[in-house]
Amino acid sequence: MNKIFEVPLYPYARHADQDAPAPVRRTVVVIGAGPVGLAAAIDLVQQGAEVVVLDENDKVSFGSRAICFAKRPLEILDRLGCGQPMVDKGVQWNTGKVFFDDRQVYDFNLLPEEGHKRPAFINLQQYYFEEYLVNRVRELQEQGAPIEIRGRNKVSAIGTHPSHVTLEVDTPEGPYNLEADWLIACDGAGSPTRQMLGLDFVGRVFEDNFLIADVIMEADFPTERWFWFDPPFNKGQSALLHKQPDGVWRIDLQLGWDIDKEREKRPENVIPRLQAMLGEDVKFELEWVSIYTFQCRRMEKFRHGRVIFAGDSAHQVSPFGARGANSGLQDTDNLCWKLKLVMDGKAPECLLDSYDVERVYGADENILNSSRSTDFITPKSEMSRVLRDAVLDLSEQYEFARPLVNSGRLSVPCTYDGSPLNSADALNGPERTRPGSSCPDVPLGDGFLLDKLGGKFTLLTIDADAPDMFEESGIEVTRLALSIKDDKTLALKERYLGSAESGVYLIRPDQHVAARRPSYDENQFRHAVRRAIGKE
Amino acid sequence: MTEDQLILTANLERADDFYADLLAAHEDLSKAESDALNARLVLVLANHIGKRAILKQALAAAALKTGEDSA
Image (cartoon, rainbow over all chains, first blue to last red; front, side, top):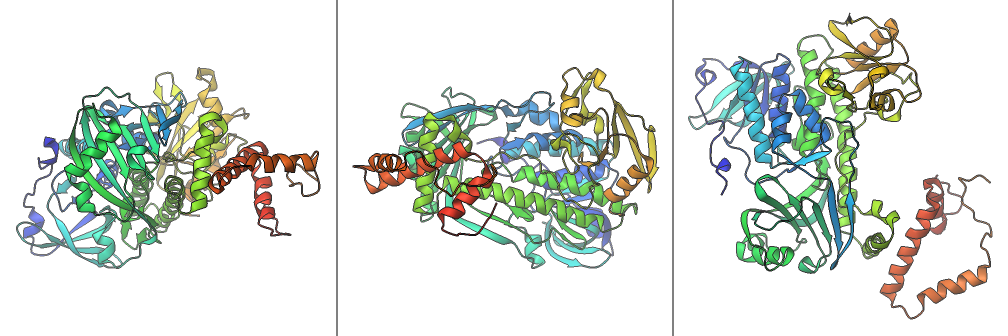
């Protein structure tokens, strides 16, 4: 068994707040030191806020859990200063095979678009992901940043007030009280915070069970994603094989609804299934087994006064398409700059309602996509099975049917069409960079565009004049001047100009486009900044 | 008539021959095999048509919901 599960990463230590005569008021408290909570904390601290993370545990999560991280979250992690270790450790893959019944129906190569710093996705166990985030927290602490993780601090009661939130926290040495100006709940799909506040979580429960197993294999399987529909070793169900770092393979086996979970989890029942899947002569060792069911649902609102939900606590999707942790990171990416501006008094509190609007929109997109994948993988009626099988049979011979095969649509960033923060599109430019879009990366001579954008309001000018800096509502907007003369790969022109000769983009701190025009116009861009911070 | 409009007037070349071909394709098939063939045929034809607006009209037409233009 991997040692990483056993070592406390943020062991309990008594804090002065526990001995204070009156509850101490903190600026931001984050509940949950999982991928989403840690990303929120790092993001806010990098912007100069003070953050306390409370977690009922003191270790990384057990088992591989979320294993597929997409390009956009990796770009977000770059901004948070910890993308590189993830990419260095992660497994990159582009090819895969699809099997139906007893045969391979086709193989594929995703052929990712060139000219991005980060790959389309990597496979990485969640425990590594969390460990690298904790390493980043430690690094920030060494630089004196006000960020702390309090292990074995379990929030047992929450009181909400117009100006703050009160918390009762249980520790191994007894309870204490704490206050926070803002509370971010990143405490997972079963969110105790959500339950303590009696908030809704509605949606669709899929009546199915999946067995997930991490196995260490000696066999030399290629680095590919293999997906089986209705295989002989798991008749009427599906199966997935995917590679992770350290020679660990992730296997997902659909089990159906009416099963005895405890029985299915026993090694004497798991091993024969895996042996049939991998082949009789393949040697493997079982590292971790779990059975899960899933739901597709979300809260009606992610913001409740001074309590804000992010990640699985706010929305839950089926695992197909890797839209769980990936969308959680896009939540905090969206939230943190807004919260900081509100805390600094630079933006009205209603800016936080745009977090609700934009991320509810994102959650609905994820729920739609992952529900469709689930409906394809596990047909719910006789005719949907007939149609599904028809797609798979056709896909063996005809290329046209392959785009219909849906074993998960990989997480791509959501474009916030119709967001109240967007200004009207005034550039006849490419669709993919319209207001609301997350900026696609571009190779520049000495690096990549997204690294240069960083996490502040930026005025990106392409062959257009503009001041090097302007200030609006206390926000500094810095210019990044580019020219297609230096655009050797033509990616800048293709992604940001299209047929236009020049372009000026206002880019938000989360690297989404707020406004774009063919040239700089002071009034228009001041207006766009005000709009992007909820002032208009 | 535009190209985004589903054709619901007679348009088949040699209609009787097509119908005979359709029946012949199902000859000697079990119910399950026939269902599978029909499903594959729908997908092949849908891909040929391609346009979503037309396909939505076709779905509505097949449901015998006349007068509804869901495009």
